[in-house]
Image 1: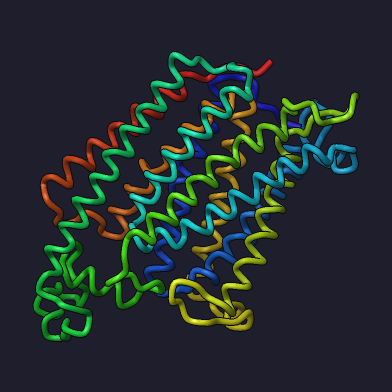
Image 2 (image 1 turned 90 degrees about the horizontal axis):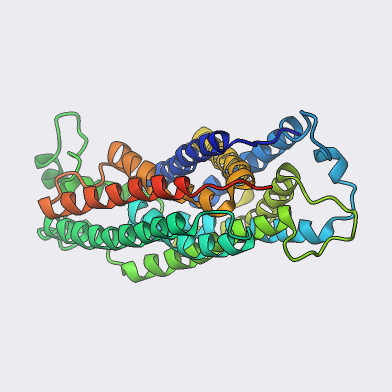
Length: 386
């Protein structure tokens, strides 16, 4: 199997993981805003997410002089570590599923800020002690503090942007009052509403799968915090699976390599996602329309994007774990600064924060700067696993 051994290699893995893990939520949000049911999107996503783990296991897990490789470990008596890996996959799958609904209620940027910050505060602390403190605490925990500051800015951005949107929509009592004539008066020449306008916000609401106008953002924030707790546990569970800090394996049984652990991790994530999303097809939540497995199979609108999202998330998680195994999982939590990437996509693809107030822009820039500092500091705390 191929092993990352240098700090430079580990940091490269983390940076690539940051790019991939910050991009796939934007793609999922894109399909929801175009009206595709999240159950359909997630079923597509989970297929390629598992496929990415299989590809990584059968390539990087089989090449190179290091042993035991992926295939060999499948038949070893290592079920204790397998259970930790699968537990990590379950909580990650629950977190990903929850965020898909949270994005609609509180927006892509705010969801990623809150979940990433909870993940770093809890997950990084657990990983630091599990890894026997191989990361430099005097560097690591100031980086965690930067995440806390960033989430404060993120909350302020959400509050300020919500006030901006409320001001834009004050002339519309409800969607029904937004007549075609009014929409045309504030739309651009090509028939699409100008980004950041009231018509733009109404247009999104009319075509999206999850309707959020008139609903409390408390629902979205509750879902977001639940997702953050789930995300904070998956990396420590994976850490236990690959390093056996609690000495659960029998004497002489090799520890799970990162590729075998990632395979089991992804299998459990796939199974729980399959069960829950098929249930949501027939018994949907949050006011979504009822669907069926046949309707899912026939829904090709946005399927390619959903497949791409699964690949990006799968390879992103794999790269995060490869970097964490080399430099410490606490340092690898730097990839949770994915709001750096998702906010960029939110602005570019969805027109978020367009025509907002100066206060919102100031807070947004401050939040992004704090995330940049946090990434740099956390990566600087990288250690070396012996």
